Length: 142
Image (spheres, rainbow, N blue to C red):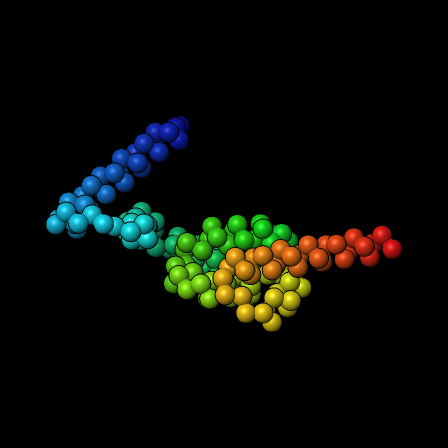
């Protein structure tokens, strides 16, 4: 059986060769001022198969909170968001996607407010989740 470290070494070497070649050919003029987003886009185009990219994007688009806590949902949302840059590059669209994926009991409390950033929506969702948990505990105790 091939060891994980050996596979990692081969992949790292392939990526190094690809990047060196790209620097020599695409950035011949010495202008190697490449943004992280550009690097990631180029890297994915080379090393992530298109059908896998499409599958991951679809997972992001259909992501719902379900039984996760708000923080668990946000972690998964953030992890999967890299596969849908056309949505998350616009803060308003990213925030709307996040809010629309919340449980209905949370979503209905948040949609009435115009959250401008994901951080604002996340904070509001966490507060609402905490309030709902407290209400249920108090109701159960009485």
